[in-house]
Length: 66
Image 1 (cartoon, rainbow, N blue to C red):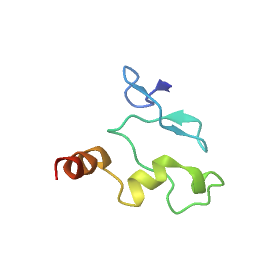
Image 2 (cartoon, rainbow, N blue to C red):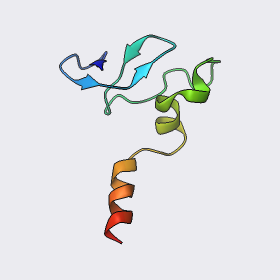
Image 3 (tube, rainbow, N blue to C red):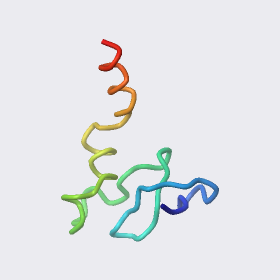
């Protein structure tokens, strides 16, 4: 866990391995989506922000209710 680069008062587990900084859920976005990154195949930030996995918790909660 670390502190968000843009919100230092927030603890987060999302770390950009390429740039070596943490991002909170509000800031969670791949900063270089079109530039090569050797960490991309295992990057949760990329998949959450670019592959449509945002609001995953909300979707899970909806499925549980159904």
